[in-house]
Image (tube, rainbow, N blue to C red):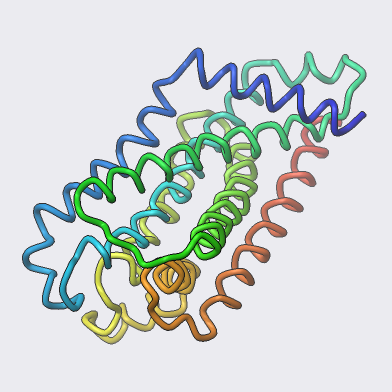
Length: 251
């Protein structure tokens, strides 16, 4: 019953994304635009700091821009459902109400992974040359999917506590900046002491370094365990926060 209801809610979210492509377009195009901006405008100045080909250093970090951007998209979608009365209508129907959350999370995961594929193809077209074998590519995209999945649950929580869709779009703003405050664009060793310490211990840095290791052959070390650990911790926190808030608001 719950699995069937979740499939129904997933189909609803995908149809909604198809009919209103503006948000999906923005979430995909903006990260691709940032990739082109950093590579062609700042790439020359940052080449020496990153050891040569900046596009090879930049791309694994930019792949995590899309998961960060998706948080705002999920939050707005959830807040819109909560404020337009559709949730009250669902409450009168016989189906698993938790499937509303699952459909939102999985639907946005599909959109996010399509965006990551588009960004990867763009990077390959402008010179990105990874050394990964098929197993490493699968592991890299699996880690990105896990990151999107975990952050989507956090986005659902933001959407449920926001009073309006507009406020839901603003609440996740600090998360949008985390990929820029890690090792995604430049090595943390080039940063001032305080910023460097924050960059090395925030969640996006071990995830970025794991992706860079899988795709470019750099040493991964303990970053793989930290990356998965951060994703699991964020996902569990977001899941329990979202389901508890949803049950309280729909009693």
